[in-house]
Image 1 (tube, helix red, strand yellow):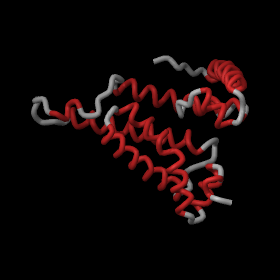
Image 2 (spheres, one colour; image 1 turned 90 degrees about the horizontal axis):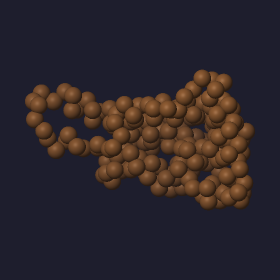
Image 3 (cartoon, helix red, strand yellow; image 1 turned 135 degrees about the vertical axis):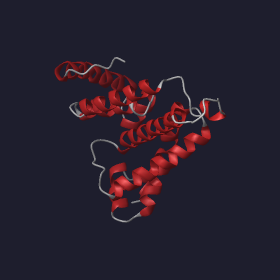
Image 4 (spheres, helix red, strand yellow; image 1 turned 60 degrees about the vertical axis):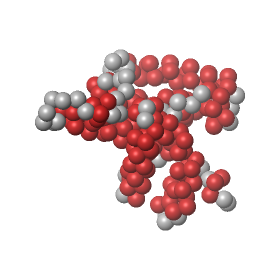
Amino acid sequence: MKLGKLEDHDLVAQYRSGNEQAFEVLIRRHQKRIFLQIYSKVQDAEVADDLFQETFIKIIRSLRKSNYEEKGKFLPWAIRVANNTTLDHFRRESRKKEFRPSGEFTVFDTYGEVDQSYEQEVIEAQINEDLYKLIKFLPEDQRKVLELRIFCNYSFKEIAEETDVSINTALGRMRYAVSNMQKLMVKHNISLEF
C-alpha cells in the first residue's frame, strides 16, 4: 500500500519503525493547516515559517522519544504543539521587552505583536488544554467532529468530507458534542470564560 493512502497513526508507526518517508507524507498532508494556525496568531509569514520549522522539530523529537500517544488524530496533537510553540515565542518576545536596559523604543517592540495580549494567550492555551482533557470522554464520532472544528478550524463541509458523512450529520454530532461537553464542564467544574 502506498504511504499516501495510510492513516496518520499508521504513518506515525511507520516513522517510528525507521521509515523517514512516512514523516514526509505527514508533513505534506498537514503543513498548510499547521502553518495557518501559527500564522493566525503571529500575523507574520517569516515568523510563522520559523515557528512552523520549530514545531516540526518538536514533533520529530516527541515521536522519536515515544512521547506521543495516539489519543485521537495526529493533527489535533500537532496543532497543540504548534500552539505551545507559538506561546513560547510570545513569552520570549515579552522577555526581550522586559529586560532591555534602555527605555527607548526599537523596531523589535512591535515584532510578533497581535491583538491578543500575552495573558489572553496563556488563558487560551489553558482552556484548550482543559478542553482536550474533556473531549477524551466524548464518543469517538463526536470527539472527532469537535477536534476538527476547535483545534483545526475545519469548516463543517471539511469535517463532513474528512469523516465521510453528510454536513447534516456533522452538524448533529457537533450539537450532541457541545451538549455533552457542557455537562462534562459542570461535572468537572471547568469554565471557558476569559
